[in-house]
Length: 367
Image 1: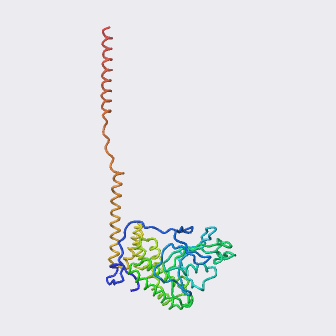
Image 2 (image 1 turned 90 degrees about the vertical axis):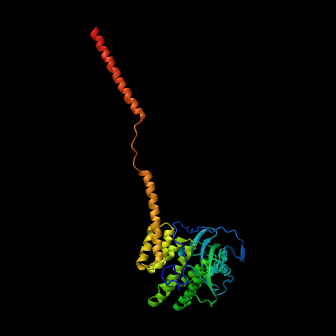
Image 3 (image 1 turned 90 degrees about the horizontal axis):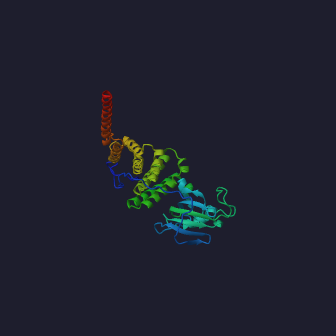
């Protein structure tokens, strides 16, 4: 099967199923967008007299890209002197493709750094202006002044072996879809080994072959072929992110699929799980109910709806107890002892005044 399945999502689920935890009502962490270069304490490695590298996160495997390898990576870039960030492919959600040895002149320093990295590695690069945008700076990025040294935070998603520099743009539609499909298969194998980060890198590389510029050109059967690879990669990435408690990112992956196929049951289900985990119970219920319309016998959907109902019941009971304490029946006021004493005192005074009046009348008669 091409896609990772939830348990019991279908009666005939096979060995590619992914066992995921039930929704929990805890808020997940969200990633922070960096406005300044990260602080790194690792050893400085000199790659070139104008390029140094510090590893932020170790990669995996032993291989590194060679000349004419097609590399896929994300990066953030700053002008070192001003600390102005001028590019961020994570924010744009579009990884860069670069063929080593055929890169643009202003990316020479960046390519030297990328060539030293393993798949999955993240590093901080310092590049001298001579291997960046040169004496003139950048017309496209006004934040890059003349003779600006550069700082890059780079993550190498992965790379294709040397193909004499054959970039995606030079491939036929069938070649691009085939290359993406192979990445998806590799990702599924890594997922089964619980290598989630590595699996996601394979899925992201597969998706990179199916960029917006490529998809806009496809119609009919070719678009269907491409979506049959692209959408499962987004959904499988979401499954990885859910297991890593990265719910906001999982919601984003599912929403991409739903923009193409609004009734996709797996996208609705996984987005619902992510929303429930973030405490967005109303939105989660909406996703699960819509998924149930298209898969009424699905046991996993029924289970998640039952969990939401139980959660709502607990919340309602807590609110009921709270409101009972605040707005409970007002107790009847009890008479204070001092009120009786005052009444007795007034009665005694009344009797006393009457006696005085009677005494005065008797005295007056005797006179």
